[in-house]
Length: 312
Image (cartoon, rainbow, N blue to C red; front, side, top):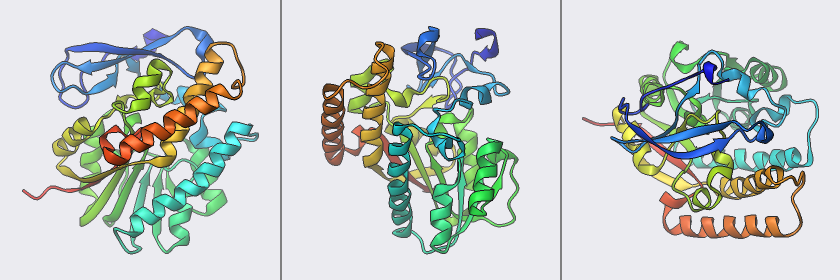
């Protein structure tokens, strides 16, 4: 399998020198023995997967029935999937309310829109909603189920007639091969007073440190980049943007802890979580992580960054 991987320089600054930080398994193939290296750039400190899947082969790692962002298009759901779907329905309303505090209804682009639940929520509240999704099955589901306008191409290859008021990346930027170029492209199709929202896992969070290579948000080899507040600010600056606000994401905190416990249970041979200790530990750690992040958003399990165009 390593012949299908490629070595890469730092996606932010182009530096070749790096040091291994973690060796993480694929959470869907824990028994396979493959470990993927997450390295830290010796120049700017950015953490990224190296080596990484070749662009033409990356889609193979998303074709697993347990990959939850595409759950709606799956024929059968587990108990965990049902919990995820319930949390997602609450989460999309929370996302919409955050945007409503920034902008009245206008044009919104959701990059990596999955099966379209967030865009459907925005459409129902008066927004002109457009989505990008490279997974054709997920895009087809969103179009058929919700009547959404979904383009199955990368952001750099998309053509839009008019700029957008809001562009969102809900846990998408960590999946792209060139995050700086992606943000640059988003800036070009953003209105002058528009806003870009980027949600990413935070490698500097309390739960990331606690779970280590079992932390679900490492999601190797699908997550190619691992941001912390400083490196997100760096990527934004290099893209002609600036972070003007950030906040921790509550639902992501507890989700990451619970799913990390599930990885531990699967890795140690327990197919279901032993009750009650892992659940108690996940909820306790999630509560602690959330409490810490309420005082210091830089410690959140996942962080929502608000970006706007830089004024030179």
